[in-house]
Length: 299
Image 1: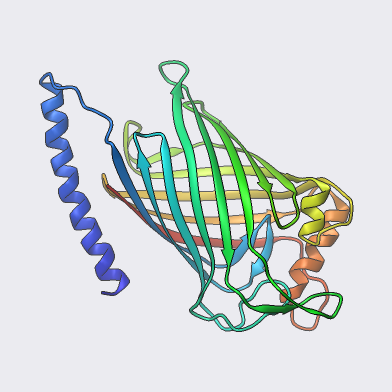
Image 2: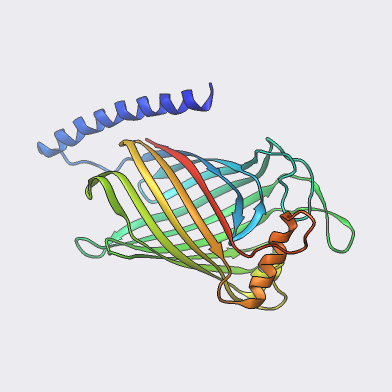
């Protein structure tokens, strides 16, 4: 079954499920209490024009990322996602082989997430998760001239967000436990405009956001941006559309711009890092434009 048929089937199934859910809500309004489901599931498929990490290029060609997640009692969840390269020679920095049409990373995720109501309109969302990232075995040529296997890594992520405000802030903290033992922090502000529908039940929304990253010296050194130098990393401006086909199927599209505005040393490192994808040049621009589209099906 091709992707189009799969999405259509998912949409039909989701809309049927939505009708069933509407009947259940109607019954709840008659006096029955609607309970939190024991298990809910979400499946996603994301296509990105470039493989971007911390505002720099980890792959100059498109990637495809399928994902799946199970959530229990609206608190605990487990998930998995993988990255597929779509074109020839789209390896990370180091040029370690043709991976066209093959998966390159596989992430296993376990976490706790919940939204706590602070007032009638404002809520605090908290997400704590652990990720084990398995990297498909291949060889790459490092700077010392020796061949070496790329190793796996692990992450601890903690994210806080406030919803219900006109500008919704999000603070995300990532700790790499194996590759470089570094920490990356990102703070962002976003606002969602309802383009079609109403605020309580939107059909089409547009969310502009701006985010700023910070890396400690282990994170910037581990990513080849600087030696023993912490600082402000990527500044990202993004706009995202979300179209709810029905209650259980949503399409998304985004466009983004990233650059290293505030730290000249890290900006130089970003130019050199991005230069790995330039033909005949050691350096490239520190900025990037990129985008993507995706679909999410939930049950």
